Amino acid sequence: YTGKVQEFAFLAADANQMAIGDAVISSGTGNTDGIAAVTRAAGTTGSEITGVITGFSPDLSNLELKGRTASTDRLTTVQVDPNALYELEIGSALAVTDIGANFLLTANAPSTAGNLVRSAMVSGAADASGPLRLIRLIPPSDGTALGAVGNLGVFSVIRSQQTNLTGV
Image (tube, rainbow, N blue to C red):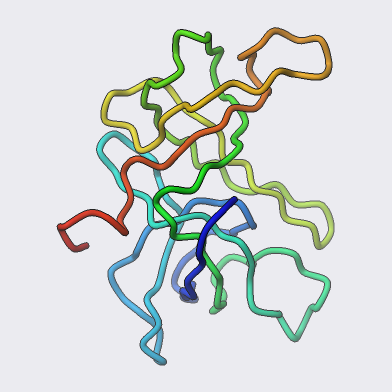
């Protein structure tokens, strides 16, 4: 990613497990210190995204944990630059003619292995009101077709809560 980060909070009432790389939206509330709270972004038609998680405050009960356990209070840093570009796994086959089109975001729960938590965000279906725009397809190194499911694409967030004039 490129750009700036801002601190947000996950509240214990939020049952989503989260990972670095997951997209989030404002939940419309905050923690007891007045820090704005976020939750997992749905990425549906017309929805906006606050940003993408870049890190978490340490969990002093488990310093090896690389993500946020569900239903725990935790501070996080989120990349909020609306001009940032992200590499995302392609969730449906794309062609070079899809470059410039808008897409939904499939916000899957992160995968876990021990203390490692991996983001499972992928691009969803093409949708004119989707929050993502395909900037380019990344040529695969394994011989699979350009734009095949599982390969990578570069996307921008075109529907950002940081630039929207309407509040939550």
